[in-house]
Image (cartoon, rainbow, N blue to C red; front, side):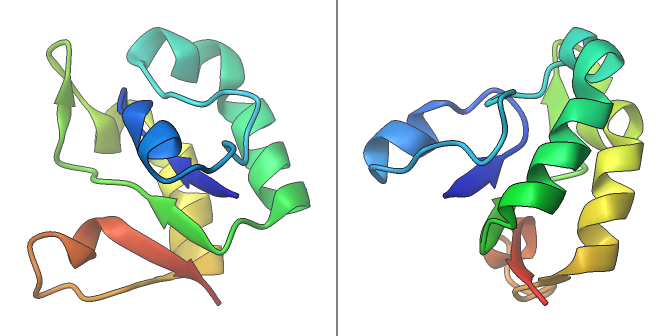
Length: 95
C-alpha cells in the first residue's frame, strides 16, 4: 500500500498498488470531509511510502494549505526521502 495526496490516481494504477486510505485522492473539498478519515487510515494501515507535495496547486488551492493537518501527521510519522532532490522531496518513508 501507498498513499498519494493530490489528484494523481494513476500512481496507484501504474504501480499496481492499492491506496492506503479510503480517500485515494486529496482535493480541497475532500480535505474538508475526509481529513480525519485519511489520518485514521494512514495510522491504521501504516503505508511504507507516502507522496505529498505541499507546493502543488490543485484547482487554485495549495495542497500544503488545505492538507495542513495531514501533512503535519506525515511529518511526524514519516521521514522525507531527500529534501534536495526535486522528485524525492515529495516522497516520505515510514519512520
